[in-house]
Amino acid sequence: MKTRTPSTSSLPDYDASDYPAFAVTVDVVILTMADGVLQVLLVRRGEKPFKGMLAIPGGFKRPEETLDDAARRELCEETGVDVPTLLTQFGAYGDPGRDPRTNVVTVGYVAVVRDVGAIVAGTDAADAGPVPVADVLEERCELAFDHVRIVRDAVDRVRVELEVSGIAPAFVGTTFTLAELRAVYEEIWGVQLDAANFRRSLVSENGWVIPTGRTARPGPGGGRPAELYRAGRAWRHGVPIHRNRERT
Image 1 (cartoon, one colour):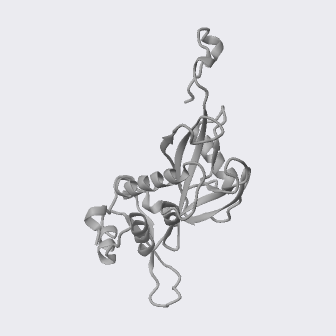
Image 2 (tube, one colour):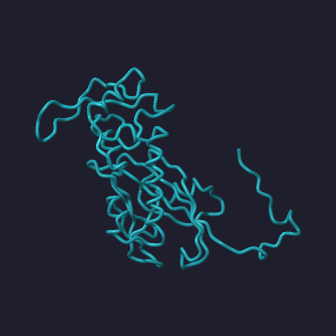
Image 3 (spheres, helix red, strand yellow):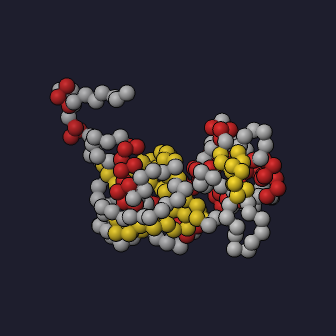
């Protein structure tokens, strides 16, 4: 259901010049797992301000768009990613001077992508690619605007979501090994989980994971191929792992 927005002509006593002007942007923190490492997709800015610097994909909201529409459009235009596994709003940023162009309030989104695939930089992005989140959080690479803060907040949000929602399977494929799923928790929480305890927590009558009857390809070291699972319906109602109790 669309919300009706009255035109200014129906508000004769309203003068927009009585209020400070500001712009609204969306910035999307795109997170993915690659070889057990949490990565964030960054673009290299092709225009001023901060031309040539790394940044979160994002841009100005158009008047006819919702915030979600703007986030999806910018995600696709600047990186070529058009079907994130998860896209959710997590915060807003409006400190004075955060954008040298004008007074800008940005709304932060976090997107989870199982496989970034072929990344295609577009519009005002000169290049795009994944960077380890640790490099951003430990400030080994410099980001434009206040994007380090926004990435940090997005990762903090995901750390919490692992305990309260079914976000973990969004980081792995539609089928996965238990080791791949365990790596999501270990990397994002910065802990080491006992493999046997993790298996007992997931492979239970609660239906967290469902065996597919298939196995993954053997690794370079050989050995018995790992069993493949898919996410069960239980993730819609809770989570099997809690950070404090499972840390080893």
